[in-house]
Amino acid sequence: MKTSDFDYLLPPEKIAQTPIEPRDQSRLMVLNRSNGSIDKRRFWEIADYLQAGDVLVFNDSRVIPARLKGRGVDSGSQVEILLLRRLDTNTWQVLVKPGRRAGIGAKVDITDDGRRTRLQAEITGVGQDGIKIMTFSDERLLSEVGKVPLPPYIHTPLADPERYQTVYARVDGSVAAPTAGLHFTPELMAKIGQKGVHCLFVTLHIGLDTFRPVREENPLDHPIYQEYGVLSQEVASQLSQARAEGQRVICVGTTTMRLIEQAAQSSKSSLLEPFTDWVSLFILPGYQFRVADGLITNFHLPKSTLIMLITAFADKDLISQAYREAIASNYRFYSFGDAMLIL
Image (cartoon, rainbow, N blue to C red):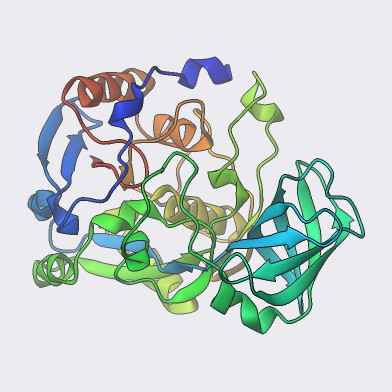
């Protein structure tokens, strides 16, 4: 297995720059793992593929205003900061751009409009892969001066920042949206619930791996970035009951799948136990899934950990065929793109 096995050529114009309105009008490609069939529908029709007793598991993490702008105190040059993880009061793991010369002791004036300083920050540590440790003068102001970060492949400004949040997002902590959930509307969720489908919520705060490509030719050499997850006792019990009764568990997004599979690995019995810890599970082909029976996801970047995960869940030939058809049929790719349902 090589990283290049998960590569494909995507014309840049296929990368969605703006979200579809309404949310559930995006396209939906449905993959059947048992017979290899591929259906092409609209997302609002996903209810046709769900049945009473199914369990949908959503990630309710909310994207924080993690992108900050400022000026280097000594250099006066423009600096951009991306918050990754809170370590302690006023102390965060961050990415700094430009970061090559941003060493320990470098100070930055954080501005709210490119001119007015609202707080100061100082690099107090340097980690691996360009990660810095930064201490802020008053982190309470971060939500006021920060902006919701968009992925680097989106170049069109977003008129409404809430459009990069799921309609059910409630727990602050992610630096990128769990994008599979962006297709759901309150009306669609109500329709699914009326059909007898159970909707459960877990939390996984999405971190650095969303932005990091796999550079090693052997995927096993790629260091996975830890993300904090919470699966409650109530949800664990409901998932265990669903499994015992033979009901399908369908994950909304790869983040949700990683969390419940990590929880299953950590459980000491056949019952799924509650989980509150760091998630570092890297799912590659050959992985034996313990809980998930289905997956709702978007179309992912080539050579990414996410396309490796969906290939592990489905089949390399089926995923390759689906991606070829998606490109030929002008599907929209990545965060604001179209969706895939794998059953």
